[in-house]
Amino acid sequence: MAKLINIGFGNVVNSRKIVAVVSPDAAPVKRMIQSIKGTRELIDATQGRKTKAVIVTSDDYLVLSALQPETIARRFAEAYDYEEKEDEHE
Image (cartoon, rainbow, N blue to C red; front, top):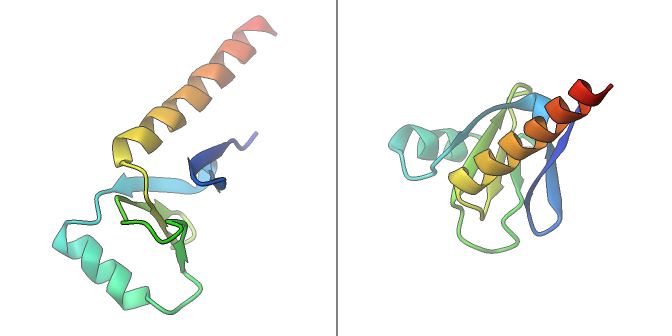
């Protein structure tokens, strides 16, 4: 079953679709953002704040988040740790 990961300000992403969570500071990531700016493939979930993480999905969407990549990764890991504990109890 898919888990939804909170990426800040009430925005969530389907965890099964996440390929990578990367910093927006690297030049290749900046180029990826610029190349799809203005299209439906770029989802800005920053609520006007500075972009601190870029989530790459398996459907070729880029999701911009104001949370640190480490925070998103921790939430991702916590969601799957919880799921594994549920599976053990069944």
